[in-house]
Image 1: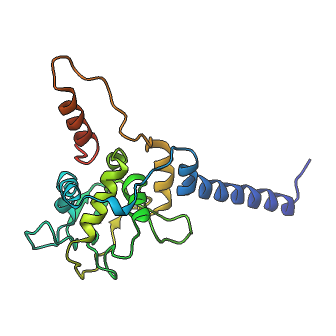
Image 2: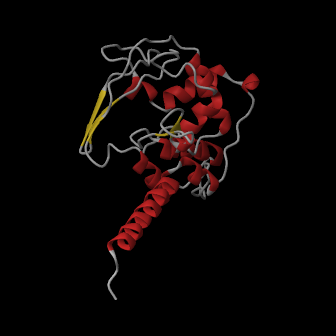
Image 3: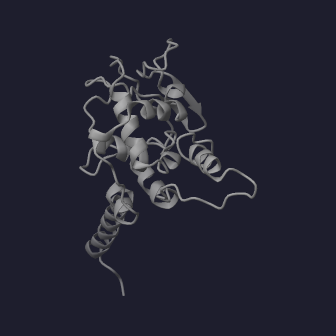
Length: 220
């Protein structure tokens, strides 16, 4: 039996609509959050600035975000380039500048970026997907205390006025929504689960090293 054109158009249109809606659901940071364990954050009042500085160094934040042309790991105005097979990533400003940096971010927004790869802003209210060139796949293993202390330490640094250039990425990598699907498939949400310690080692020291290697140090 022949199908008339109007019915066919409706079927195709409906299929496309379902596909688009399905993609939006899969790529939404909210979907990841609903299917993975939540994050806990301690109060800002108990922040340890010295520990935050240690976490900043262990995380190698300045390696990527130090202001271009400077040799100062406290100036995090960005501007460096990361050239990859996917295109060029321009390192953003993560100084506490309120216009071009992250000075307006709350602790909760900072922590969500660090441990879920979602920044504030974007087209939709669920947030802006961050590319995994920012190693939140490792940072997700940081404790809430370390994330909080790092936030306080970074907010104590000098604000730098510098607007980083947009990334220059190839299709389809330049479509940020696709990162949401990647996150759903590959970001496991594990919060520093400890493995067995080898025999004959200082267990506490080994666990500390394991935490730094797999978390802040993002050695992978």
